[in-house]
Length: 541
Image (cartoon, rainbow, N blue to C red; front, side, top):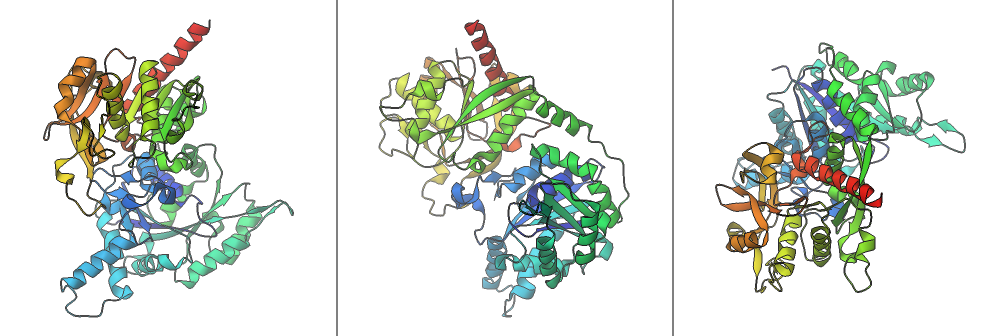
């Protein structure tokens, strides 16, 4: 297969949007009928971000096959609308671990193991593997050019370009054109230096994507072309956008994908972006607004709940509604002086996302109880389902002190308990129940009607589960099972009868939501929130 390979690097500063650039290009190429594979190289030495603090790294995105990955893979999936795999996420830790494991097993026959060629060969193998069934492979190199930890990846892609025909590789450098207010002008010098550093490492970018607050005039493109050895027509401006989902359309107006096809000697096909344009129009022109309270313990860093926040917006798109997220710190909901009524005033729905650890648990139960008692639509995800079960046990079923054995090993009512296969594990990384598992929906449940299917596959990331010993007790009080994993009889979802909309799920639906294909649970939550908002208007009248 004549696979083409695109490598996306970044310069000048971090957080320029390499991931969004790569994801947008994937969407544009897919709109032209090309099959696209996309991957991220991260230079940190952790095997994966699964054990990293969210304040350090943001959310952990889980793929269908159970890989714990960088949050950029979420952008890739949402933009390209393809399920990625563990081969889409490669860290320095994975690469070094694989090489050292092979050395210990005698795989190098006593030879000296070195960065070149052994580490770089391992990296190149990852590129070839993901490109086996794709027309185009897009590989984002994490970090900024010049970072010492990223040099093995840079060297690997330098070698790679000479191992395939020259027309089959393209290096795209994402850089910054800063605007100086004092002189009121854009400056190209940082980009020039960044490109020269990249060239000094043996890589000559064929295209520049220039982030800027202001349009880049033709004469500046000519200047960049002269000093960076990049044709002026291959210098693409990428201006700030109100929404990430506008970026593909903005880059389409720059003929970004057509120029990429030209550089790679691919046929320039007509594009079909009608569904994406319609989605963006719905997002930009809402007809109503709802407020959803997101109750977590990492709310200072919104990236810790990136997929949840995006999925809420997807649900809004489905209803042509603007979703305003009210970020609520869970551990600030407890205490004698807290006015819970004031915190949730004007809120049309409450969501408690996944998480780990004891901090904020009591506050999350306060949020659950408020939603339950005030008929506010509620969605609990993973831990959010577990705290809903704990709250219901305590305040409806009379199980004083009911808890999860994660937080209270000696609880008299262990309504949430550790999974059998998780007992005794000493290694924390990559050992949870991860990836997609089957969920059989209860025939007469609200979830069955919402999904329009008897069975679904949803992604998981957890160690603790609903204790089946309490199923009948809960059902007798109105909390019933709405979904079960048929292989293990694990409870996957619960619903509260007699409530307008109250759902808890053990899985993570946010990982499978797409802007042009919102997840049913978020469509349902936002729909219920809209009804709540309309009822409030009627009450006021």
